[in-house]
Length: 164
Image 1 (cartoon, rainbow, N blue to C red):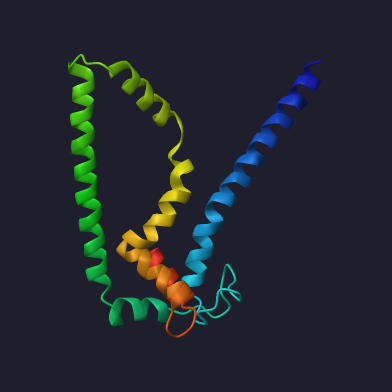
Image 2: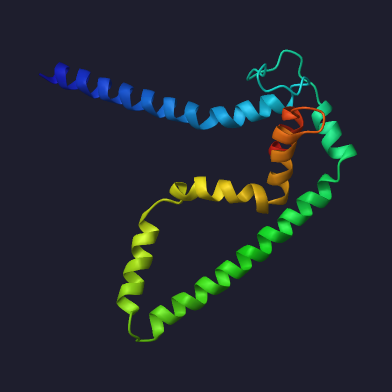
């Protein structure tokens, strides 16, 4: 009886660990792929491997020395900082109003906030991604490089930009 319990315990543990490693692999693969693409000198996504055959720093050289990358990065930091500051400020004011004042619609507003916060932010990522190409400076430039490059598809350069 004890042997059967021990075997069941180890089978469950193996299955749980196996599923955890599969989930980790699925989570890390896109990041590893983008990193590998950034080292690919051919600038072609269709022939990109996870680990390129002839890795090169040419895309990073192009990005850091021939493009105004520090300016783009600083602009993105400014936009992110200002939007974060405004968002936190407005949320703090709203939270104060909901916690201190008694008004009509307070209960409905609190329940609505609770309902909205119950759904994970990942559900909104598709909608955010659709709009981010037009608003985020670095992301829009990476998108233009990858899909609208003047010299063809600049996947390596866009990946180098995304990694930085």
